[in-house]
Length: 143
Image: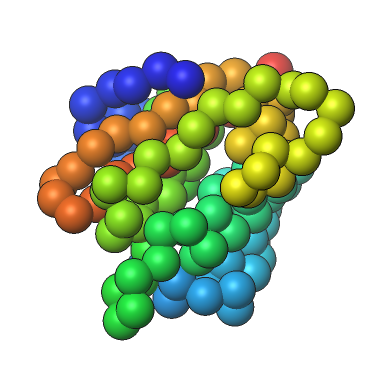
């Protein structure tokens, strides 16, 4: 997991999409659907980005939930071949933990971040601004 400060620069401002969503299962599902539609409109492949969005949004709704607060999904094309996915929630004190593969599900969460690690070229966490954190992943497209 790599840490970086803030969002990456966007190559083309028209290829940036950001939306707040309710920190619920319904909000996580909507994040996946909106991401798929946005990627199609940009002419980018939907998978595996849709799976990464689904996992990060589900984690925000489950582990990053604070009653009455939303999470934010951001998609940005940061270079002609790089898509950055960011999910910001309001539980900055609850950082994701990298779990070694051991043949059984991690005690607290399952396999979600292992899937993100496998599908993404890079991923990490950015702290702040208080009380938030952003879990991000980057996918390189080979055109």
